[in-house]
Length: 247
Image (cartoon, rainbow, N blue to C red; front, top):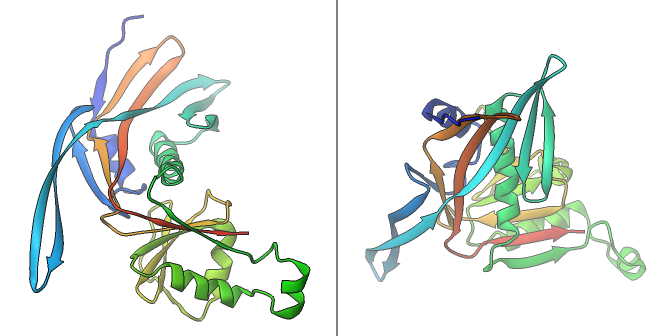
């Protein structure tokens, strides 16, 4: 079958409203899957703010979703790092957005400059439980300690209730359209809940910790197996992030 590609910009715009774009990092939309971009960063030296321009070459990764009709249902098959997932009667935008959030978290676990921390809340030995057991309040204090120098934290869903109950939380009043949604703030740290993650691992970062690149067009074409939707992206590590594994 001859492939006829359609480059759709409106789908990418709708995906942007649900996914991590501009939520945790600068997002740059490009028109080609390879090329060069120029980014500007700033730092303070004495009483002066200085700017640095850096050129970065890139080669976008491709994420494919195959759509096919089967028994009056629309089946979506996603190619992810850890295997394929199948969704039934789910919109393309919702599926791509959810996949990108998963890919984002997977990429964070692979960053080379991550400062890693561990906190034992559930897996405490007998002596610790008998003398001075860790509590949920202790976890919040550890969270504040680790978050020093950071501006955002992504909380896995299985820990969300602990933070929601904390009297240190300033609950967000904004409407949450993103899949990874804004819960509120603890001190100056913005907390986001990832409903698809139950790993117990919290990630911390700043807006300049990474750069997100995305092709402004989605490449769509028909194959013998169904419609192929191809979204191109790249997460570029810029400065160290932190993680806190709760066990």
